[in-house]
Amino acid sequence: MTDGRSLKLLAALACLVWALFVIAPFWWVGVTAFKAPTDVNGGPTYLPWIDFSPTLATFRDIVAGRRGDFLRAFWNSSAIAVSATFLSVLLGSMAAYALVRFTFRIRLVSGLVFAVAAIGGFLLFNKVAGFATPQALGLSLAAALPASLLINRLPLPGPVLGNSDISFWFISQRMFPPIVSAFALFLFYAELNKQGVRLLDNYWGMVLAYTAFGLPLAVWLMADFFRAVPVEVEEAALVDNVPHLRIFFEIVMPMVRPGTLATFMIILAFIWNEFLFALLLTTSRWQTLPVVLAGQNSSRGDEWWAISAATMISIVPMLVVAALLGRMMRSGLLTGSIK
Image (cartoon, rainbow, N blue to C red):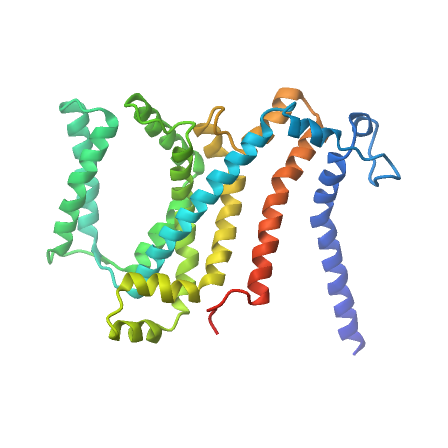
């Protein structure tokens, strides 16, 4: 009995130490955000109203725009993150549902045909026919897709990829170093800009980039939630001749609503904090919070009070969203959850 109490005490002590490690950075940033410059430069102080007198001067400077267009960056991050997360979850849910409920068989040779036709067609249209890069890419993909679909229908020898292989392909897209896809996307957007399609430093350009960024994660997460839905519910609806699209939106999606919210929060956090794509694809008009936060230090020096205040403003919205949606899931306000 004594050993059991000792183990519980040791576990509680370990949890307390871990909690201190987790909370300490947030406390330090929060305290620094309310310090005056003299309090920051005068040495370490930890307790407001005891070690130093808190002030809202830095927050007033940020709201007034004296430390850059911070409110515009806040709005940019909000609009881009919410839009891209919504599209990622919507498209990812549809793809995940299809992978769970339907059987796909893709011949490896059809994939090779698609790659050869796309690359060869691009070189043909771009280098020989003289089309610009975006047009050449679009034409080559338009030619490669039907060719690969036709090949896939033929009883040709070779490996056949199934649903699990397709799911792995989705999530494998996140295994590449982000700089590879970000730089390639920048070059593609730059070519589109030359053709009059402005996607650099543009709302839709960022939304499309982040939708592609979050889509593999949405497919991977939502597939597990759809597997837990009893297929008998859908079969009963099919007996009544209910279309698959109505089954998906009106029956299946309400049953996985808690999982959908969890996926939404995870992807929203990734997009809200993403830095590399925003750095390469924006310049001024649609810069997001991480880029503006990084610029605080580079343009003004080590003004930690301003950096901390800006960080607090960028953290609070995600904490509020997580608290609200988490409370909704825990309290059972979401109807139709899986029993």
